[in-house]
Amino acid sequence: KQLRRNQVPHLKLSGTKIGEHGAIVLAGYLEFASNIETLDLSCTRMIGKAIGDIIVALSLSTTLISLDLSDMGICGLAKEVKFPSSIETLNLSGNSIGDENIQELADSLGVSKSLTCLDMSHNPITVEGGRVLLDLFRLNLDQW
Image (cartoon, rainbow, N blue to C red; front, side, top):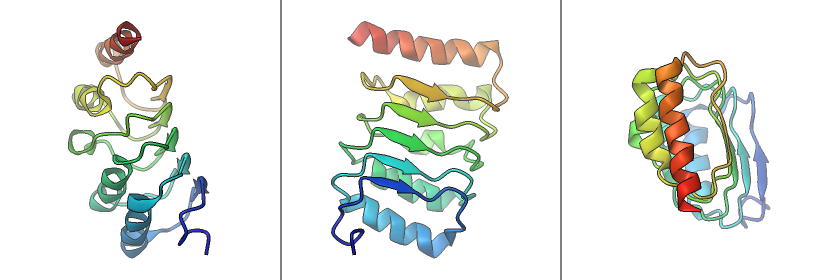
């Protein structure tokens, strides 16, 4: 019932087998969830389109501050999405994101004054990819 009334500010679905139909339902809910602050979808292993639909729905959010997409295998998705500007903490660890995806990720995060924590652990990023991420945070600091 609370989900229907959009009154759930913290939603943890880590390790669940949401499936394609569940992802469609969740994306529909998130599109109108006016107060969601934290969302944990870690280890759900949704496939590209399903997680893409969810992130597109989240991109409209003005209240989401923490998003955990760790261990989901979403390495090629960054170029297709824009993360919410309200995001403060983003966990993308364990997603096989390499240097070839880092610039796309930086572009999808944009110049967000609110992003203060980005977990990229357990991804095959080299020093070059690290520089791109460092530049992203430098840009954010310059905007403050």
